[in-house]
Length: 612
Image 1 (tube, rainbow, N blue to C red):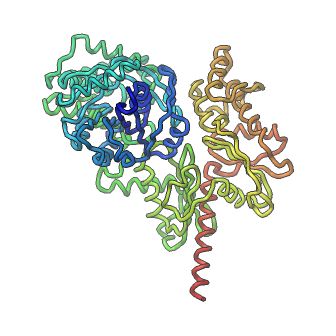
Image 2 (cartoon, rainbow, N blue to C red):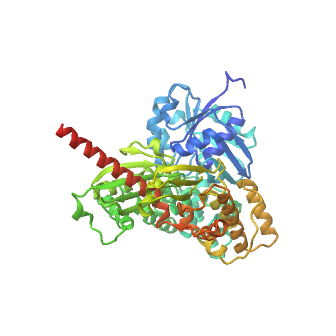
């Protein structure tokens, strides 16, 4: 296919499914544009491309990576693949209407019954196709997906058979690059949608509620009977809709689910991470169609309501008054002093610091004395804008914020604060509040390691950062813990029980994983593995320059959860390194202090102007 005749395909949403499709469509010769609203994630994809691991091993770089759908206007796409959660789709469709042309076709790459109707509402039936996905993966980093399984084929079809030729075109392209896909007529497509939804409904909420991978759920005898009964309820409802399955369909479902492996279904990941789920399009749809035909679906109803109850605290618009309930819970969790009453301090000035880190966004509110009164954090890559809005609304409604400052990786893309500062400056300000004078600061974060030198006046005299590799950072530790099946919260205590004194030879995360697997095969204990990993990190930090005569302080999320690192670094540097209180929040605390300094400076300048 020549560049002039290349199909132009845009993939909207870059979760695991979107990543896999994007890589394969480009391999098939399409000109592929990507749309990812999370700037940190989009930036990493621009710089490093997409990486698929495990069942599919592939890398690809893309020329066009957008942060908003509007950036695709005028690009003249042939196909739009919507690989989004159903709760994000309606808003995306509204934005995508500016891309509508006579030739454009849109494809729902989403799980659940009737989810394609979200696209039909904007583009009409004749332009809408539905893709039934039979592969899955988990994101191991912003641009990397671990493909956990592919049970071919996938299916694609036109909603009303108006663009069957286009469905066949996509099916042939994907099949040509080993992602076998079959095109179907609209009636067979509906059957495949119901099949896949029954499979999802059988396991997804169970895995979420029970915190189980598919393999764990399918290997537990106590859950097998439950799964079979959920499947049978779905079959009964489908057959009332004139959808017929083979006599051994339950057996086929169980065989399919057993191939899922050590994988958390998407809905389970959302539930575990306190995000809204797609339960209404899974078990909820089986319940809805069951009521239509007066069929009892007790288990599907139970799981639907259970999942909704577990996520209700994060859905601000569920019932009247829910917004206040959410705000109250966020405030209660975040108050540093639980007896503090914001209502009695309505006229007092407060200052807000937001640290938009690579792994987490941290919020700190301080009072006029510089003391922290509120702290909260959210996963940066959770993409849950409502949760972020809930925290900011809670702060705005309970504290008289006079000045605010953003810092961290995402600071330049956050325009709602008065000022922005580097995390270097904020770290120095935060530590200097507690320990004035010349000092070293070690900050181990999600994606980098920084060593900061402050002079006698608390100014940053110099700083050093590790290279771009994430080795030794929070993301490195998380990936290693996942590989060896260690609960990351237990890693520090496990390491403290070991006397092992060897480190990893490899610091590339990929090679380190392989080396650790050799440790496992050699029968090494989890205690020794944990200490070996920490020794490697301590040695990496030790290679960075510290001023020997100065006191040294550690901050960052890693030391918050891995305090054993401090013990090893004490040995390496032969000094007592101190961990600042609430180390994960020190940078956001420093940002709040700089916001206070800026606000007071502005107020003083205005007073001088009035006098003049």
